[in-house]
Length: 99
Image (cartoon, rainbow, N blue to C red; front, side):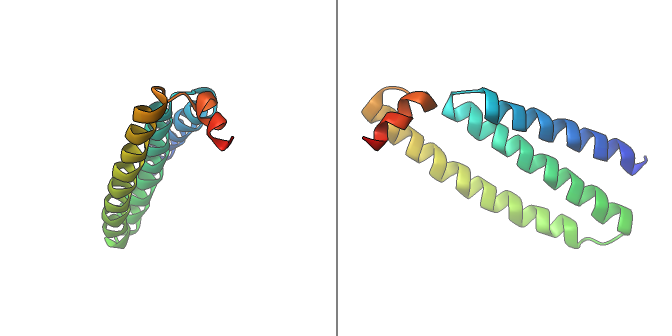
């Protein structure tokens, strides 16, 4: 299979994630869109490492996925605490926390 398919799929996933981050107001959906963009980059890393026959890219993806899992756990914990206090996870409402 040509690497062009992986490039196209990765670009589509990244664009969907970027549009989701810019267009949505729900914090959980924004987190999911960020993860989608991260996985698009991971897909590219695996595709290029396979193309070049080097497993370093695939090992690097495992580390990225571990760090991303920790990041999501911390982010969801913060969002659950915000929801307990504000009763909403709307980003427009969260901007009022500055005051």
